[in-house]
Length: 401
Image: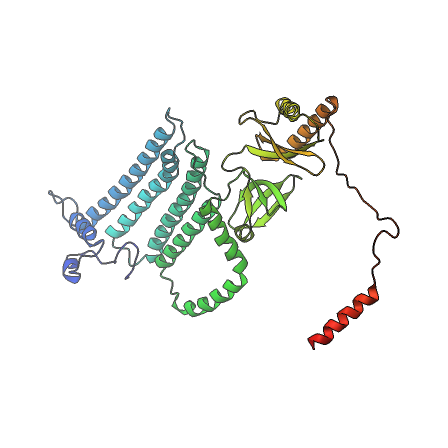
């Protein structure tokens, strides 16, 4: 059968070379096995048929022993003293079982090849190929996920979005599906026209899902955020990223609520990552004092409050800036750093309470806006003649005509 995954099938016999002069993928193997299996022994004790079954038995025994040896060696390596989890060990722990089973199945295939049963048992060969494809597809999916997990937990600073594991799974499943179609020789030509129309319909129906998928890939490529980062979305929502999927991103808000945000929306709106490039964040707190207050005393008191506040970092050190002369007060701005964005409100609360108490003890007044209103005395101002104003506007309109 042309296009068979293990090569073109051909009979083993003395006329095999004359019937197929071209070299096929497994023709040399068939010729070698046929020549060896049909060569009588030196003493003539066994005929060609007996020798064939001897070859089959030898192939099966060798394949089983080799598979068992691979399993034994793998366990010795994985159970060794080196318990460090590395990418190489993770890969080896997943491939040694499929590799051993593949060796055993290869022995079965070679036995069928020697017995010239490939043409009479096509389903058996297809089942062997299916088992190999499924085993290695499963191993590939597991290897991809473990590889991403190890790199995330390492000290090298790699940050992989979890959606890459889902993308890898989809890719492996699609590849395995195409191989299985080829193995079982399914005819997909009649379905191509219908698939084209169905693809257009699904494209319109799943445009939001496709947009979210593309948006998620763009967010990862741009390295907008990762799990554990505190993000702010257009000043409407703020929270910690807990999961990044293909379709959406899950955010835990400050109210302890899980919000699922579509990736397409995150890709088209302004997202502020308050945890990047570093987790410590600077606060800018306005402070006012009455005119006549000593600004040096104000600076000393405010910095003492920052020293006593446990949520304020001492490096970089807090600073108090004299910003402007306000309408009714001296305006200062405190710039201090905190360790994590989510403690911003608590830090501002502690600082405001401390500043208020310190100003109260030092008799420094925190002013409030004041306005002076002046009223004209009766008869002091000119009266407004509404009728005269209307006559002036009408005469101007007549001139414009």
